[in-house]
Amino acid sequence: MTDDAWPHPVAVVPREPVEGKCPECGGGHLERYPVLSDGGWYMSVKCQECLCSVERVPWNRLGYIMLPEDVIL
Ligand SMILES: [Zn+2]
Image (cartoon, rainbow, N blue to C red; front, side, top):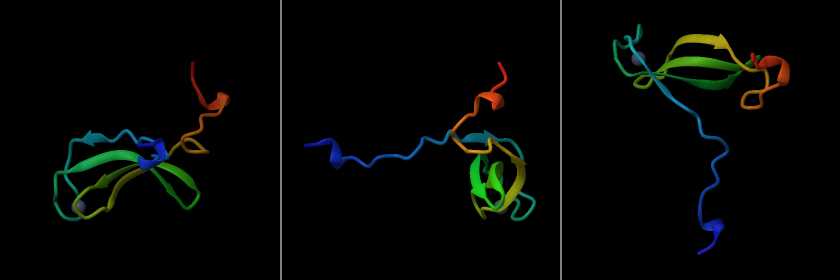
């Protein structure tokens, strides 16, 4: 068995459960995670049942790559 037998995840996306209800389908399964969309990366809250975006705010310009000036120490 070699390492090649394993899938190589590009990145592990930490998904964070969010309290609330989907305005589209009324489902209660919301999660917050980064998505790449027009204009760059957004931290999005999406309904996991109908996949509509409940909330979307601009995230790191390069996604998973943190620029030094973007990190608040
Ligand atoms: Zn929904």
